[in-house]
Image: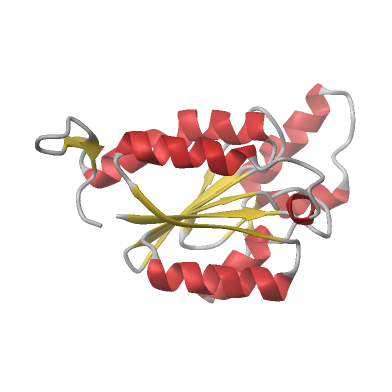
Length: 189
């Protein structure tokens, strides 16, 4: 399984924050025996992100994205994935209610711009995020998987450990030890 990591956020390109998500995910993929072929960082720009995701779609079976799932105008990951895959975004009522409840527990009304965090596409399932407001996505289409995760490292790592690793193991049929190396492998490259 060829994997690729796409880190999204202009703050990464400006050096305002260190990209620890790629380091974490690269280490995790290696421990699962999944071959990481490419990593890239792209700013919050629809055209550039679309180009990066189209290229990733052509060359990798597993695409992991971090960032761009927030409620702001610059958070464009969901919209761009939908466009690249030719699918329509719709508001998932259960996700919307989760967000409303999240804010209500804090004694505040949900800002209208957070509704975009409750959107999904037909080929996606939401990955809940109890650490924040940005649910992730598990997208399966045409034999490929895109996993979209939030950018804050604590949220991304929690989601990885609690909502993604087991799905990757299920998809691969479990971890297989490579002969002679003792290293885990999911086979194929």
